[in-house]
Image (tube, rainbow, N blue to C red; front, side, top):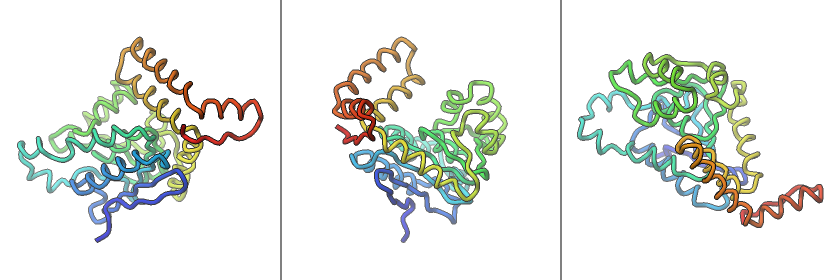
Length: 256
């Protein structure tokens, strides 16, 4: 039986590719468990400096399996693996890049939003259509959309269920880069490789600092940033980076 999440790597960049084509990569409990476990394992691997999460050319992830969702009881919803899935992936300290082609709807859009950066094919479509089914996003869609797009835009997308294409998503600030139909994964890998070439400890600290801006008042965020900065100053990579700059050579970061 083929894995629901296919893993590969290129140097310090790992790729987790969703592999449930018969269900348009719908986020089943089994797929979510495999993806969360893969991200946790890679996050603990010091050789992994960036993780790319991708789907297929046709679909990134289409969200929940509606037939299964229709039969789910209230009690089952309380115990569903999705409750822990989003927290597990969000806990990754390693930068996550979403490589999106085709549909990223419902839970698929939430998975892309959970990543730190998004590279989208010109064919990509994003949306939170849960309202059309009589429910609301449950994987962070309302919260992350509001933080990325602002209240007005988030309200529009969540309350209407309207889909947006890659170009509109880029204009809204949801997507970092739009690539041509055949180059979306390559461009996502290029971005991930650029991150992987940076000092890994500083990258993880920088990710924490930026995420704190969403979660803390300004004064607390500034204090948190300062503490992280002081940690970065204590690393060997800081000395290597500064020496390389002064000596006009390429740095060799060791993650120490």
